Image (cartoon, rainbow, N blue to C red; front, side):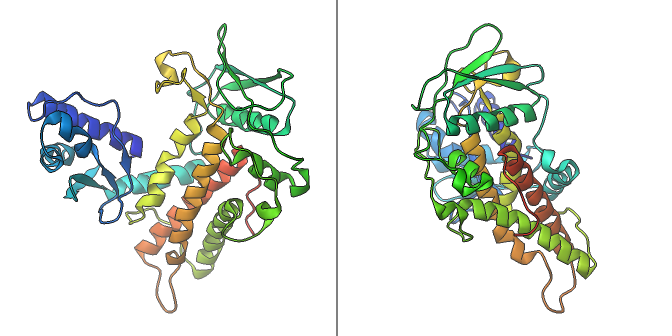
Length: 354
């Protein structure tokens, strides 16, 4: 079960409680689910009970108690605990995690690609400026990963801030004018230059500095590429130790959640007139100029969660490989595939050795 699917399950639980007369509230449009915070448990947590308490005229704890049995009946949910003032902590069935890892390993770097935008053509207008050109290229790659196409044209403008333009005819149209690069990024080299231009939000001025080249934790690009290289290294080391990956249940909620969320992140390459409506609904959609920077930040999150997992992948000393080691190895392989695929969409190399 992905975070999006789990969010739908939470809303379904609210709707059923309302229909049964247990709650008297308007069912919200969305329910936020996140990895549990301090004191939380399970794979995900939601504060929907705190959100609904005031309109329901009840305490958050009471709303959580009402929703708990409805969530317990949701497919893929193994357990529900209430913590704090009314947070619902959700534990998912182990096979759901294993199925997700199997899918990613089968699809490899193309995990998250789809055909939801097949036949769609979008227009992006950019000034003659290096950052705008790079962001338009990444946007075209992301839309292409969903089966669509982006036509880039130049409007002759200079600088400005990113934003959505209007649309005309059958095409979604966006105007991309990010805060321009303060200087030529070419001396950083292709990979670091692209990262420097992509990672900040379009309205933020990028830093063209040598910090993007240093190999240390403070450099987000290094962390992403290092995490990918480390996943490849543990796979080689596991082969030397004579054991292979086998997806299975494990406790790595942060990383699993990020991997499950990857298709949604890629899907943000378009935005339906700034409203949260799916392109398939028939709404007129336009390219989302902030999608490249969101993908870059998403990869940083995946990398950080992966680096936490990796020290526990291989057995230590005389320890023999167990089912847990095989499951962690499979998750590491899946994380490496997502990092490689994401970097490819950014036009950045993902080396196996770093």
